Amino acid sequence: MKSKKAFFCGLLVCLLILAVPCPGLEAKPAAAFTVLFFNDIHGHLSPFQVKTDTGTEEMGGIARLSFLIKSIRAENARKGVKTFVLIAGDMLQGTPMSTIFHGEPDMLCFNRMGVNAATVGNHEFDFGLENFLSLRKQAAFPFLSANIFWKEGGKPIVDGSAVFPIQAGFGLTIIGVTTPDLMTTTSPANVTALAVGDPVVSAAAAFHHKRVKGPVIVLSHCRHQTDREIAEALPNLSAIIGGHDQILLAPHRQVGRVPIFQAFEKGRFLGRLDFEIHAATGLTVLKNSSYIAVNKQIPPDLEIQEIVDQYAGRMDATFNEKIGRNSVFLDGERERIRWQETNLGNFVTDVMRRHTGSQIALLNAGSLRASIQTGDITVADVFRAMPYANELVTVNLTGKEIIQALKRAVQGQREEEDGGFLHVSGIQVEISGRVVGRVTTLPDNQPLEPDKVYSVVITDFLQAGGDGYSFFKDKAAVRTGLPLRELLVDEIKSQKEINAELEGRIIRSLAR
Image (cartoon, one colour):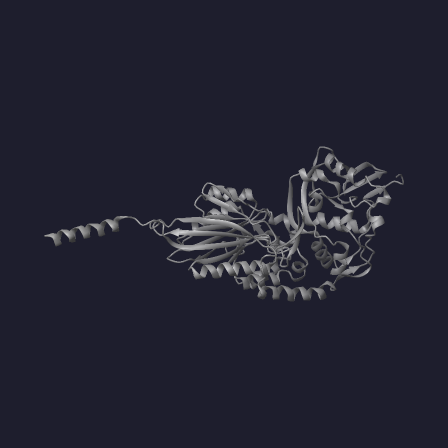
């Protein structure tokens, strides 16, 4: 009797033990995975200097990014966790290496790093549609965009989404979308065969078409406001990884249950998202998110560094490549370019206006540091004339505000050689001493209207308040991602023969 009682007591204890839930048992994940991401690298394969409060700091470098990615992937593999690497657009355009090799070394690096997918950025087309199609073939990963179509026939130019297996019957769906700014932020000739649909509508269509069980991430190269609209339309997304604005969303933004991320620009940060998929519910939960600074403390991946070094060595010869001919002396001499109209100033501001579709272009003379001689023009000649990596920025200004900028431009005495003197395209300016006189628009010769709004292209240097143009900082601006120096190289290659002239855009009286 005693032994039977002991048996039942023992059985009851065992049943009670089995009935007690173990901590975390219900939340045991069926799968875990990590997403690493960056955006708007713009050809910055080599490290570069950024200004800080105390001086400068070296940031970026694709070899350092690769070291981080490979280290995290290896650590995750030991734990049975998969790692996915995503690029949120604008892989190209912004460095001499990108300009010269049109993305070839970039694709080599991305392939060796194990990138899984990239959304199509607007600047992927800056070297022409054929170059884009060639890069797509070179890439060992898919280019994605659900809202770029062939104008003729309406078929998508690339897949709108891709699926990557995780484990335990789950797959990760990545949907790509591209900003409609594509049609205005690259040369029109590059996109005449294309059409861009609404990214919100296209993302929703791709989401509802998916057939694989598991999380969905939108990889967006749109503005942040568009990303918020996508989140509102698709509240069951696991995340949106953005680009195009070139901002660091730290902390990340949240719209409903959807977190939105963006990792600044030029490979300065690597974003990391750690997810778990719960076995019982299939729900994907974001467990951790962070941004890792890519700085000198990160060692380079030697395999990737070797690729970058090889192409950097080839650039020496490329800088001496003849890209066109100059039938006239392009005058960038300091004593003239900082005081009066020159044909170099005209040539550069015309390029600025043409590539942005703006009505008016304004360029500070201090950005032009050398003349370009008659005869053959090399890449090195262009880089000597414009040593700064200026990016084009567009702003809307009233006629009154344009006059305000012109008044600042004429404040210097001739002997001061003021770098803030402005070269112009799209207007004619009369100056008497330090007084701005009549200003008319070209080519219609109509007076500049004080209250009328004009589209104006300037450089990011001016937009940041450089050369005393502090009032530009308060203006809503659109960063085009177009590097002016590289556009000049492309323009000379396209025109082949340069014969820019003085046109009477700036008429200066003898008064001082």
